[in-house]
Picture 1 (cartoon, one colour):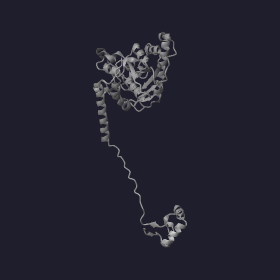
Picture 2 (cartoon, rainbow, N blue to C red):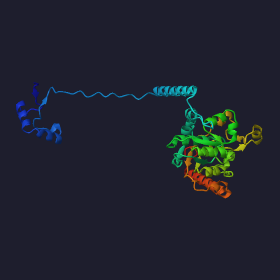
Picture 3 (cartoon, helix red, strand yellow):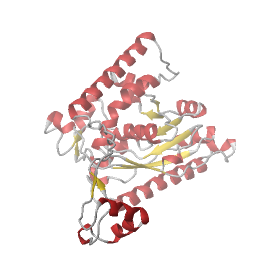
Length: 351
């Protein structure tokens, strides 16, 4: 048995032990109320040798270094590329009647667009819940920016932010499918001609389609007329929605007008090249290829409340007054939303 030596004088080991046994709580109470240096009587005996229990050793995993993170990302990218190649070579993918290739769109096309969406334009999406979870719907949006990048960003917004991750099927102009290479990619990404037969087929199939009624008048308008909607045509998109009973979802896009501020148009060159316009911006064509880099404006995409069409009778799609009223209603909804979003925006690039 270890020898017990009292820490303070004033008594033998025997007397200290008997005192402690007489009232074991006495010293504990005093220890709570007084600093050890103020004791005037012997403290409880403290053994020189006390059993100790080793504290468990905690193992901390070091955070991965930037180099390790890059390696992991590279390995993951290689794995995804290998899996994509395997599926393509094995024919393990499907293409619908329009040429839409979901495997290509999700593995190649959308990943190319996401850096623009997330890092460059920093797009904020609102009202995505207004697009139904299932069934056909027609998204109608304003159009601007010289190059139709707004259509691409809208497709990323719906695919990435909708609760059901629904693909957005664009109704594009004929020119998109006549350009070498572009037409093939557009088909694989899910886009088709902006015509009533194709629009109605998509909506009846339960797809979410998107149309930009301003067309080239919208994306080619001068910078001085930014965010002023052009005519919406004769209401062909409304007719398609009425025939299929699909709801119309107004969509307002802020930010696209500033990516290529159009300050001029070289009309003779546009006619020579078969283009609707040949834009002149503060940076293009003066800076050559550098002028093609879009300015990093801050974007907002807001989807409005759906306008339901299933309550109209079968003849409504042929009634010019119904078409005009619904078209004007959609246009005014988008225009007022644009004004509201612009009133909140403090800076073109910072939002």
